[in-house]
Amino acid sequence: MKRYRVFLLGGMCCLLASVGNIAMAAQSGDSLSVTFTGTFNMVSPCTVNNDEVIDVYFGNIGIDKVDGINYIQDIPYTVECNGAADDTAMQLSINGSAATFDDAAVVTNAEGLAIQFQENGQPLALNKPLSMSLGALPTVKLRAVPVKAPSAILSAQVFTAVATLAVSYE
Image (cartoon, rainbow, N blue to C red; front, side, top):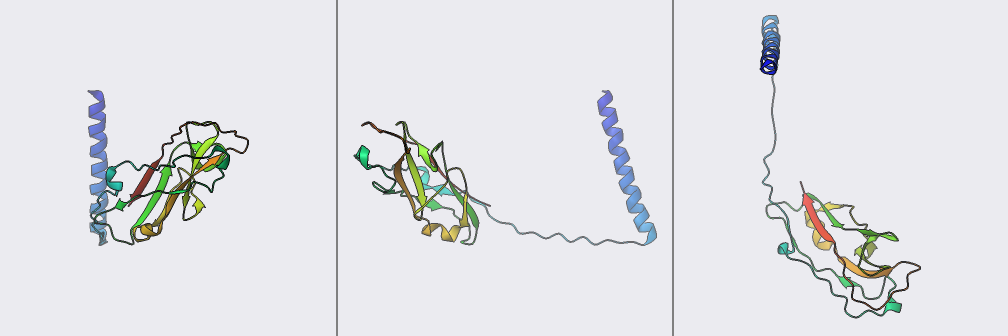
């Protein structure tokens, strides 16, 4: 009960002080014009690959041939940002658990093996956004390639890895 009264009185003091300032400005002949401007934008969410999982299949890999070049695969993806203009600033990122030996590679369940992501032929660090415009997105070619830790000795086994492709814009 006491808190409510203090809050109410405090609010009234602020209100009275504001009215007093307005009254003083009016009495001294001061005036102030305020102009407000802005732009309404329709923001619609981006959809990556129609909200479907993207599978990248490497097939059978020779354990002695994992070198960051062999077995490279394109990552087929689509991005739809309905209502957004081509010059809209956006960010694309691949998020996941990075391998200790390569910040552009996501860990797999196989010891010493990771999957490196590349953007237009260059390693794309995980969890770091790549800035571009929406219109430039079709030129971004994403690829994945198996890589191994420098001292790793791979064994024959099935492997999997998981990462998230995220797109956002303002």
